[in-house]
Image (cartoon, rainbow, N blue to C red; front, side, top):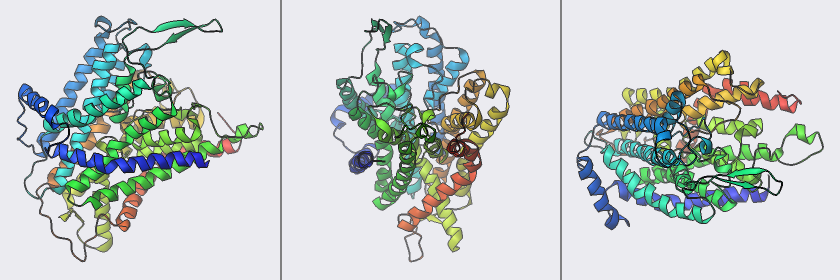
Length: 566
């Protein structure tokens, strides 16, 4: 590890910290219906959308009504994208004349983008028409991210409200998240990315002849407009197969820094929104602190593993960091930082091949996702996932001191704990069960290109990533009917089997009377609480996933140090 590498991470974190409060203030004003910079332009547009769609913005919904709208909107979005992918051959903006997707791959892709996962079992530049990329994938990048933000706001309202049983209006939250947050930032930063060399055109691919006399295809298309929202919305699906390792998507260290910032900034700002709406910003900063500690621990492990390099290569007399699968314009430090950022959130964009990381370097992205991607997390999903852990933490703290647990003065009782535990069980069940099935069945092993613990890690990573709605992957696992269907179901259940309990939890808390803090109150913003929260998160993850992780990355690390490969 080098001082320059650490300086990159520290500067990056300081910029995230500096943006958290102002962006959080702006988002609070947006979702509270207050006037913002964009109000003169966007309020008429917002009102027109409500009139056009027949939405009454003043009508609020109970938790089950909010959940129904989330599910109904997602179902319609899924069907729309599936039909588009199955008919793109006959639709315009297809200069490469790509064929329609097969039914199982179209299902997998439609579920992937509808759930904000953006898992890609295909190569985008050789599969997707420009219309599918824009009207299908990029559109889903906006609305799936906006839906996640909407759910987070609904959960916040449930936690803080002391009267009524409603959580807001899903259609209003969805519209405001898209119109006031995602669109303005996408336009401004998208133009910046194009100015840095990211293509944005409708031209067909170009074939050129190199100095060596070989032919090379140069990919074009509307890449810039999709690149910005894939990062800002923590989506992650690349226009091209190499994703953000491609110079077409990520040309320079500057764009790399900006793209990492985009991935993290909304998730970080939502912690401030939580504190601000709770009228106690210390609550939000406590969550930010817990996330930051976990973030730096993860980055330290990845960076140390990659900077130490491969012992088998060192035996050949070649010293230095592990640069296999990494772009030289980024190096080990920026690749380790990007890998940590993208798996701390539900993004999945990559600027290096995680499959080529050292075993412990590859373990951290897996663990980040196994924890529920709550370390800043995806847009919205990180915050409501963290609130679930907060409920579990105050419950455990209450058991430890022998008193009824409280969150913002509200008593956490049996029903709230049941919903929190239900949401917490989703990840281990949907990761470990299909991983075990795939590891022992012919269909699961048929397209696995690596043996031994690394091959097992590829299967474990696939189901961890799809369940966490991340979308990044270890290479070496090719698609087939089994994986297209299984990972599609995993993405679907991984998103909504957490959203519904989270909204139900918020619904039970909404309207509960809050009591004032007293001498015996266990505050949920003290350093002790932050430490306990981190402990609960780590223990739940370690106890659940340690055996599986030991069979993959841990065993591989031990064997590589003994000179054994597969």
